[in-house]
Structure formats: C-alpha cells, structure tokens
Length: 145
Figure 1 (cartoon, rainbow, N blue to C red):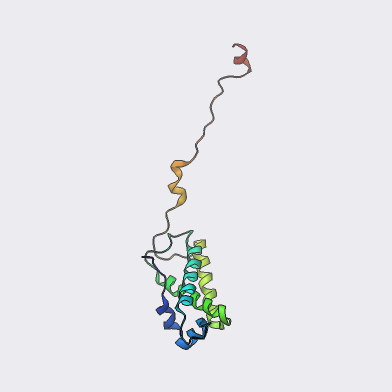
Figure 2: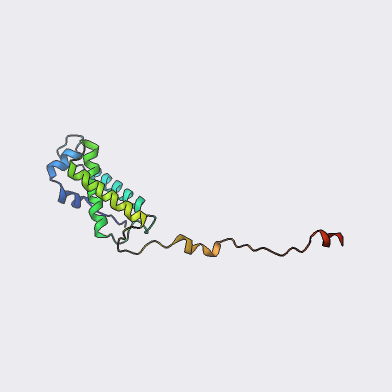
C-alpha cells in the first residue's frame, strides 16, 4: 500500500462541494470528478517529494502533519489553477507551502522524521584511495641496468 500525504476527504473538508464540482466537472455531469481530485493530490505529492527527497526518504512512511497540510493546499491550488485561477488566499497558501518546501530542501527546517541516510557516508568504502610512491627508478639507476 502506498502512503498518501492527503486524500480527497482532506480536500473536501476545505472546499464546498459546489466549488469542487465547478473545479473538476469539465463534462457538466453535476458531480465531483474524483479522478481530477486524485490527480491534483498526486501532483502535490510529487512536488513535495521533489523538494524533500534530498533530505528525507520519500515517500514518507509516516506523513508529518505539516506535509499533509501543505499537500492539501497545493492540491487545492492546482484544482483552481487548472480551471479559473486561484483566489488570493489559495495562492498565498500555495506560495507558503513552496517556500516551506524550499527551506526543507535547503536544510533550514526539519520535519521531525528520520532524515535520509547520508549518501556520502554509505559510499566511503567505495572511495578511490591513492598514495605517492617513492621512485624506484630514476636516471642514475636506469643507467645501471
């Protein structure tokens, strides 16, 4: 089972159903197109993973609460953006989410979960080692042979 950072219920908790229908129902069926909601959630998760993947093992096994919050904000922004443009408050939430994710990627903030193993520490046994050897032969010793 794949861990999800948020689900359609999280999105529905923040948006009125009529608004969600407006944002997803391109076919005028009068219902929420759950495939479009899931696509927005998947896109939000991919964006989060792209920022957090350098510092943490993604997808997160245990989803930090802040990641769930920002996944919802990003997914809702994406739904608005595909249709009519997002209201200012949704754009602000999206911008805050991306700024936070940039801080995670830069190591300025932590998520309270185990960071990814340091790649450099894992590969030290594979490092190339070299040393300078003393010359055995030079012009004087070569003349002797």
